[in-house]
Every structure is written in C-alpha cells, then in structure tokens.
Image (tube, rainbow, N blue to C red; front, top):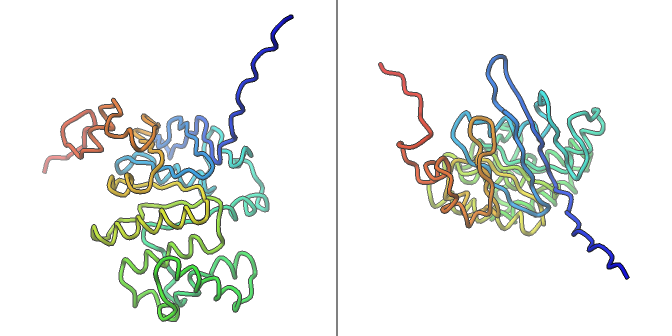
Length: 267
C-alpha cells in the first residue's frame, strides 16, 4: 500500500508583501528591487541611513507614490493598480504617525484626533469626540488637553496626540515614520512604550522606519535593513547584534569605519 504524500504546511498570507519593487526619480534609482514581507500582527522596523529609500518605500506601500515596477499586496491583494474607490477602501486599514506629528494648527487636539473619523467616515462630532477622548486617554493624555491647540503642547505631547490620531479608527496596520525624532531619550522611551502598548491592544500590524536603534530594539519583532534601495538583511530583532552582515553591524553600532562610506565634500 502506497503511503500518501505528507501535506505541506500552509503558509499564511502576509499582511503586506513587496516583490521586486523599483522606483526611480529621473536618473536616480531609489528602490532597486525591494523584497519584503510583514506578517499579520507583526511589528517590523526598517532601519537604514538617510537617502536609502525608507520613506519612498513607505509611500509606495501607502499608495502615495506609484512604483515603477514590482508588486505590493495587502492581505494578498495587489494594490499598485487599484482604482480610486478601491484605494480609499484599502487606506481605511491604515493608520499613520508622521515624523513631525503633522497636527492641524487650526483644530483643537480632540478635533485632530477625530479628523479621520469625521472627514473620512462621516461620523457625527459628538461620537467622534468620545472616541478621541478615549484614544487620548490611551496615550496618557487627559480631557483637559482635548480643547487645547497643538501650539500649546510640548513636542512629546504632540507625538502622543499624533499616536492617538493614528489609532483612532482602530486600523489593521499602523505606520510610524521616525516616531522618536526630536525627543529627549526619556520621552523617546515613553513613546516607544506607548507604541508597543497601542499596537498590542489593537492587535495591529506595525511598520516603523527609523535610524534610532534604541527605538528599533524596543518595538520590533523583526528588523530589516535597507541599503542602496535593497533589503540587505531581515531577521528577528533578537538577532540584530549577530547578523553576520558588515553593513548591519556598522549601522547598529554607529561606526564611521566600515563598508558604508559617507560622501563628505571637502571645503
């Protein structure tokens, strides 16, 4: 009697997958064949120096930029050729914490947090305000802050408001663009802790771009490094210090000497 073949284990569809994604601006190639997967509920941190393609890759995933070629899928569905209505539906899965918080000066704090709920979903102001107050509470800000304007807040408080806005609609995927830039080390760690907590509470997938290794170590399940438009290393955060990759090792330890050479122009 012939033994039936052993069934291969099913591979879960990644939440986000990039295949050979390329993007150039004139003669300058920024993304040169990016291959990357982000699992459901995973926190992926993308590290790399300035000008290596981190932000362009993020904008391509968000649909703010159209890649020249390659595939980007969300929940197994190709997103690079979506129509306007389908793209809007996909964008509702996303939340975003921008590098500079990007709050609207003309709106109060709670209106900033509730902006997407009211403008994107047409939610009534009263209901949206209740959600905004709850999300502000989730990031450690009380109702007394809700009626203030962004200009009355410190940098750390603005980041918290930005985080509250990012989670307001309880997105499936949250993107963080340099979340600790401009913050002192203590406030940066507070923001890192809040990111971990909020992502865990939502059960969301997180994608963060940063050059802050303290932040990367704190919030990442996996870390990927991009260099010259390609992912040169990808692995568990616990393996970053023994990657066996000279480029990763130089970046992680912040050494001037190594394979990554900064272009310095003599005066």
